[in-house]
Amino acid sequence: MGMTISQKILAVHAGRDHVEAGELINCQLDVILGNDVTAPVAISEFDRLGYPQVIDRDKIVLVPDHFTPNKDIKSAEQAKILRDFARKHKLSNYFEIGQMGIEHCLLPEQGLVAPGDLIIGADSHTCTYGALGAFATGVGSTDMAAAMATGEAWFKVPEAIKFVYYGKLPEYVGGKDLILHTIGDIGVDGARYMSMEFTGEAIDSLSIDNRFTMANMAIEAGGKNGIIAPDDITQGYVQGRVKRPFNIYKSDEDARYYDVREYDVSRLEPVVAFPHLPENTRFVSEAADVKIDQVVIGSCTNGRIEDLKTAAAILKGRKVHPELRVIIFPGTQQIYLEALRLGYIETFIEAGAIVSTPTCGPCLGGHMGILAKGERALATTNRNFVGRMGHPESEVYLSSPAVAAASAVKGRITPPWAV
Image 1 (tube, rainbow, N blue to C red):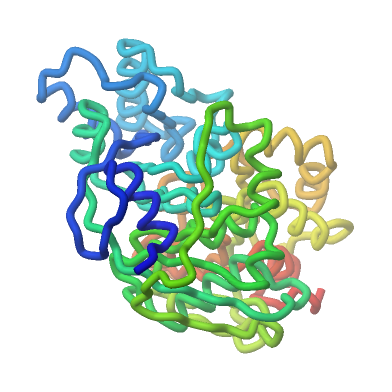
Image 2 (image 1 turned 180 degrees about the horizontal axis):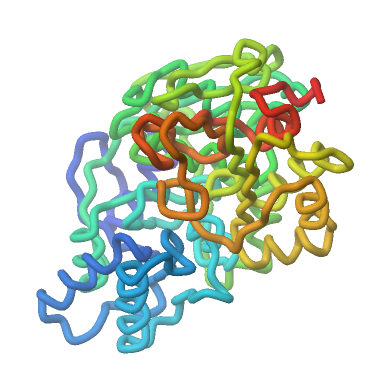
């Protein structure tokens, strides 16, 4: 029996020729990631273990991004823990303000993750890197601590679901709509502890930015990881970025899947997730006229240059609705700079939006866009749980940048073709 791409990556990193779903294995890791929320706990546990130094200063990546620029004394102290640890152990990959970005936008951009890698991060959206054909998954802070000490982590080999997307994508429909539609179909626990393998002609045509968006939200369906087999688009992205050898893996034709889901995308339209779960989806034409108070465009889900391009194209020459706040978060400093050079930042500001330094900000209810009681936000982020962006009696709706930008103009949820 053949193996899926995820099984192959796990087998290689476990020093095995073959692994089966359900097996418990130990694997060597390529990248170990932490941020200013999760890494301080990992660092405390690492110090408690008594190891004099980390296993490999090149494999550990620390990115303070959740509460940065620091919003208060506590967040400043959290960031200082990372800074001191990075200096003490001479870590190669520590990204402070000025070089930093939202971690899941930053690592691919910097060439720190590659096809065929095995990556863990003390952040649930580490699954983003599956867009490059890597096995990437979120772990707890104690697992991160053990990995910094040993370079290894244990895994239960996941079952896999294959998601096949047929047809040509309609205008304004992209990766965010595909993944929201999928989560709406299977539910937030529909792929619990499973590998979500995205394939089909619609995936083949997706840009790398849209692929990152899809892999990013695998966790919102309960997935252990999301993954797309590398192709020419992948190779074009990693070429010149990744400075170390890597391997390409693809699923065998006779690989075994727990389930296969097929979708005809040609009839899709942009999707909106209503409160308070990503599975609570409707097409945008069924969501119109929901009045909103705030629009957030950015995050590790939709803060890349293509996302900003889409939003800028709709906002160009238009004004944000006077009763609405619009906050835009480029994913990294480089994305911010490219958007500036292309005129997108000017477009946003002229439209009446504000543009923030890269940070997770309001996505997790951190800062720079918290909702008051009774307020509604439409966001290109990944979660809309109760109280996710502020007051427990506020509401968050999820959408693509195209829907978010159009809605920013109208002051209510609006299809992109209606502005």
